[in-house]
Image (cartoon, rainbow, N blue to C red; front, side, top):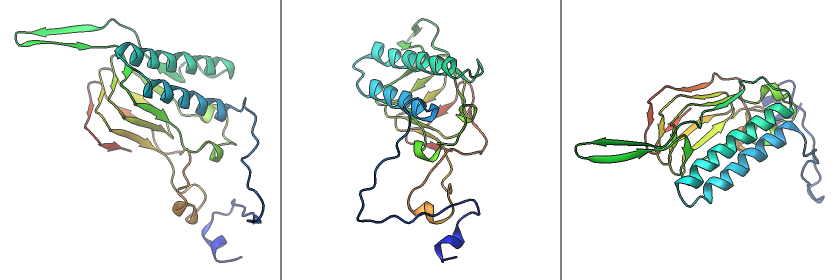
Length: 207
């Protein structure tokens, strides 16, 4: 055993590559559930980034809901694995000083969900893909992010302020040397729960 191998878990295999050879991406079926799940997340990030108004922001969340529901049906997942509540009208809240609007659950421009590196999850079963639950009238502020490396449960009327992050992933996926290579993967750590009416402050990281 060489020095670097002594840091790895017993089930880790090291394979030497000839650096003169071209290192190609893994050839993975596009129907692999991990690939499809990550494509959904990338599609939603693109839609959110390119939104131009509140309607686009609401539509991005509705698209997220639809894509996850279709994914769940395709792979025969449990009905409650993904739950996103986009119901309800836009509410006008008035008081003696003025008024403001509360839109149905939506992504503000640039807000998104992501997942740890997909090529680190290839042996995960579809049931191990994290659950995502989002309540009613929840707002993901501009450029806020959720890294779904474990189950994510977000309540009703939650406000993720601009730049805030919900982060749950495993940094020590393949033993200590992988940390320096920024190796991350899905984790068995407990879920993140954000209670009803919670406010995650600007640029805060919860994880």
